[in-house]
Length: 327
Image (cartoon, rainbow, N blue to C red; front, side):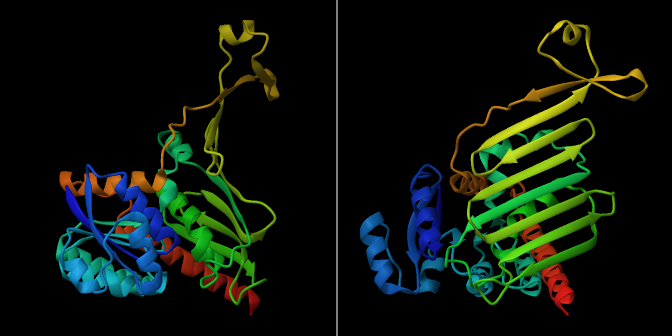
């Protein structure tokens, strides 16, 4: 069992604490820290977890540090934990800037500890159901729309919402980004609240990403197009679908319900729709559990710091493109 501290007890921090309580066979929660003492007193009473008023004292007392604070404080807290030789799980985005993320990478390598970034959609049950089916996609389209919520307005929508899809896309496209085109506009905040991005990769893959936090509905969908297959993932409804186009077999010809399409030159293809089994699960609890497994088994973490850095680097390139388009 690993001892763990949660840093940050706001909305998401409380969720992490509850998830860790559900992983009592893996983690022992030593306590939590938050700068808001009034809220911390309430959380301590509600969840029965000890509140520490001294950050360094808490970090020193554990094996693992789970950072769930506003992004602006990620670098300082993670640096402190890494210098003390602690394993670090940190919520997305990894840091405020790519430069800070690079420094954390160096500190983590020097400390020789395990690190993971909370890009939670990697653990969404709908994505896990088709993850192994996604192979060399050549066109990707994602929509992540959210109804207005004042929480999160301290960062652009690219860092708040779109970064989820940036990370997912980078995780399935095995090729460097060649070109970025982007546009966005601020509606209710001082930074872009809606953005559309086109990523072009060296291998020819193209990804079209749309994110908005001023939508009239919540929507989180991705579609992956690859040779002979189209894979759709609904992250919100936890549903997946695979549509394949294959050769027409004798059995398909005899099936009156088979979807057979006629192609040029007399060719035919059989369209098959597959609904993979989506195993229900709590994505945050799953990512924390995977971090435990990586530590005790000394294996690579699911989303190491380098992945968090790569997603943040692309996000900043997107923000620069948005600024350039305005100029």
